[in-house]
Image (cartoon, rainbow, N blue to C red):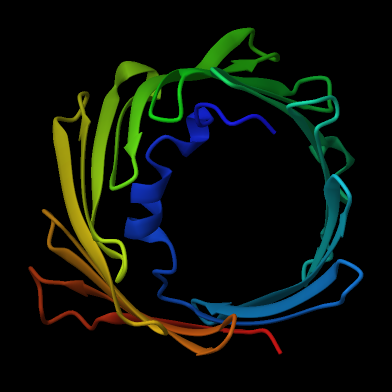
Length: 276
């Protein structure tokens, strides 16, 4: 695949991951194993709101792609096949979720030295078509995305943005919701060795005059222990500690607190990921 500008979905992704990834108020256990032939099996069980759900997923990697199959406790089977460089600089992703035969989706990604294009369409008569395009370089890129609803003949979504990436920082500005909201984020690496990182994100919805400012940070206390925290202007505080028990096996404990109403009980969650 060619090295060029990021796809539109990746604009601001590093900041989003720091502020959202691994934060949870649920309980989840995941066990993974793999073979030397490229087959990986993952089983997970999660509890949310007193309800439990689980799934078993397999992934088989071959020369230029992979085949993923996931079966959950609601008897849904999700099958996804990905093929890269078919043709050159192109990635094709096809998915189908059974028993809903109308859920099939085909996505094509084309990555060029100065452009990135994606097109996705559902495999049914009234499906929507998702399109996105970016131009630029790995450092600075401009992009837009839209969704065309075939059933109504209207554009259901159109967003635009710009992304700026350097080895020690990442910034993005995205105009979304048909121009009704704007979100800007900036992430800076203070210490690459200890992964000390700070991030700020501000969003505004023009129709309601609602503003949300969120700041966060992450820090590796040692090679096995990661700390993360985030706080927004509404008083919502999130904290997380993740410890690597053994190579590729992690225990994550996180909490959510309302600093404006300390009488509320905090929400706690944990996730245990084991890879024997």
